[in-house]
Image (cartoon, rainbow, N blue to C red; front, top):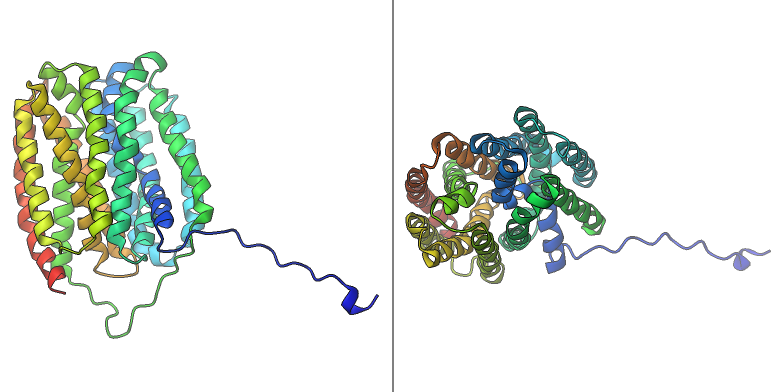
Length: 392
């Protein structure tokens, strides 16, 4: 047999992958950056489900959710230190498999203290995964658009969760809450192979190491305040509505609708990115969030409760992509984006923690007022870095 008669060995086919900066890749990255923290998007259902399904006190149920997010903050901060050196895809596989194990174990726990410990550990792993996701997003072109897609995925699927899970807990128990988290992680695992490699790009020597620490710190503070203000109320929105005399079915439907309508906010970010700058859009959106939050004082009127929640849903999904995009704008390695994720999670955890300590048997008026104050402070600290980035 001559060499010419020998059939060439075909080269192994490379798995098809989504274009690095295409819309499909932005969707896949949104799932990656959500998988470790999806419980935040169903936080009202989680808190209410632990009270209804396991007879936890409102304080204990709030602390379970809060410690889950505090753990995520720890994991996100740890990733900031090593994200440039990580093989992000292999790390994501390992972290998601661990999340599946911890969510499965959580279904078997009925003790508040043990569940707090388990969810804190789950948070550490999930926070590390989200930090990796944020760092990869920062390596894309126009990360603001990808962060907008992130909020679109979170609000869309979170809306399904808060609409249906509270109704399923009485029939199927709290296991249904953790099964929803397991399902989301499994779907994300199937998506991971189709993402591009997103290597770390070396920074030009002239700009290497240059980070405006003052504006960055203000951006992180704005993220913390905005998330704390919103999540502190969101975690207790079901009992707040109940105290106002609203039915569970109406409240769950309203929250689901608010999340779905909130998709408009993230969609606007994907559509416009920074075409109109950051300062004016953020000023208007955070101001509207404060107005909607104050409107919750009038929750006894169904139309006010509905309008306030829908308005906050839109502005929440609009503001966070811009603030995360601002953090990502300070470097292209992804470290500052991961640090932005840490600040965001600290806010998401601190809001429910403060609420759990202050709410008592129903001090919701105080929670609303504190949230409004935090949002006004958010505007004050957001303006300088937003103006700086707009000038550049």
